Amino acid sequence: MLQLRDVFIIVLMDRFKLVLCNILIAGLVIGSIYWLAKTSEKEKAIRIETVNRNDRYVKGIVTQMFYHKGLSIRVKYIVDNREYENSNGWSINPNNIHEGDSIWLRYAIEDPNLFITELENEY
Image (cartoon, rainbow, N blue to C red):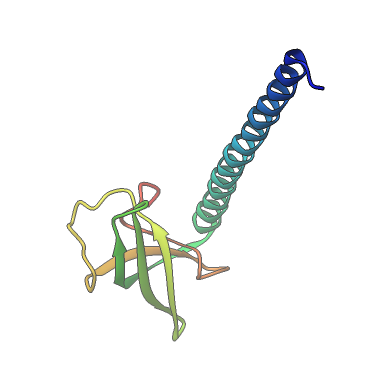
């Protein structure tokens, strides 16, 4: 027959397992968010470095602008008779640019998929 002391130990162990499981899940979620943020920062730094190394200017057309979950923009532009359409984040919009407007951007000569628009601080 189980004594009160044994029941208390079983309940305490179950709570300990529950707390430990929640701590592990929280650690995984926080760790994943941190990893994603660091990866994103590294990719942005590589993109900016590549564009700054050897770039050209071109006008593009804003095809989409997103104002939620981070500011991002989709731009269509032509380099060497080839059309590109890519997206990036944006920081400022002093000229009140919207979808359908033209926009200046700098692209990397070695990879025209990498670009910086006039709406980014790094422009």
